[in-house]
Amino acid sequence: MLYIIGLGLGDEKDITLKGLEAVRRCDKVYIEAYTSLLSFGISSDGLSKLEELYGRPVTLADREMVEERADVVLSEARRSDVAFLVVGDPFGATTHSDLVVRAKSLGLEVKVIHNASVMNAVGVCGLQLYRYGETISIPFFTETWRPDSFYEKIQRNRQLGLHTLCLLDIRVKEPSLESLCRGRKCYEPPKYMTINIAIEQLLEVEQTRGESAYSAETICVGIARLGSDDQQVVAGSMKELQAVDFGAPLHCLVIVGETHPVEEEMLNFYALKMETMKSKGDLTNSGSV
Image (cartoon, rainbow, N blue to C red; front, top):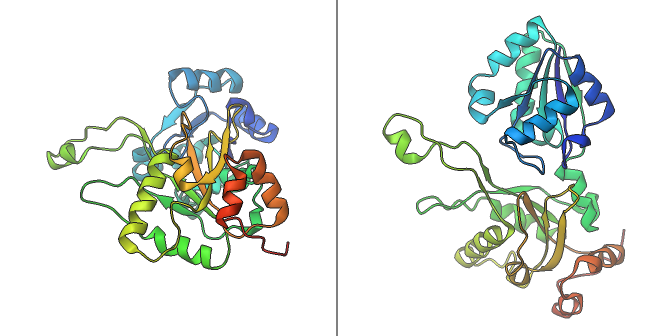
C-alpha cells in the first residue's frame, strides 16, 4: 500500500488522526520537501519532531528524488506499506497526482488522506472561497527570464470580479546555472519569495503590459505562515503592502476582486487603512452573495 498523507499547514501536530494511524502502520516514511514546508521548516530538528510524534524514521524526499527517482518509493510500496507525506493536501501540487498515476499504473493500491491546504485555508482573510478565479503562481524573475503568463489570468479574474490567489515561488535544492553548464550539480541556498517581491514583480509586468489589469492602488491581502500560530494577515493596496515586513516564509498574496459587504467586514479586521481603501473605490460591493 502507498499512503499519500496530507500534513496540513502548521506544525507536526496538524496531521489528522487517520493520517497518524496510517503513518504508524508504515514500514517506510518519506516527506516531500520542495512544494511547501511546515512552520518549523525541514531541518534535522524539524524531522526529529516528526519522528518523535510518528514513532518512525522519516526520509526527506527532495524534488530530484520525487521527479526522477520515484521508482524507489514505488518499488518499496510493492513489498510493504509506505507513507509519502505532503505539506498541506496531497493534491495541492501536480507532482503528487503524477505519483498516484504512476503507482496505479503499476497495480499498486493507493490510499490518500486529505488535510487543509492553502486553497481552502486562505478563507481566513474573509474572502469567500467560491468567489476566487484561477489560481496563479509567480516565479522568481532573473536577469534573462521574466515570465508574465500569469498576467492574462489575473486580468480575466478581475474582469469577472473574482479574487486571485497568488502562490509565490519556492526554490529548494535548485541546481545553479553555472554548475549545470559545468556538468555537475551544485545547489543554490533555499529561497522563498516574499509578498514584497511578488508585488514588485507584478507592478513591473503591469508597467510593461500597460493593460490596467491592476495597479499600485489595487487592494490585496498578504498572508504569511498560513495555518501557523503566528500567521499574519494584512489587507491594503499593493503599494501599502510593499512596506509591510511579513517576516518568515511561506507567503501568499490575494488580489481582491469585487466584494460582498460581509467580505468587506472581514477585510476590515486586517486592513491597514480601510477608509483610504474605500475612498479609492477598490472595494466594490458586488450586491449579491
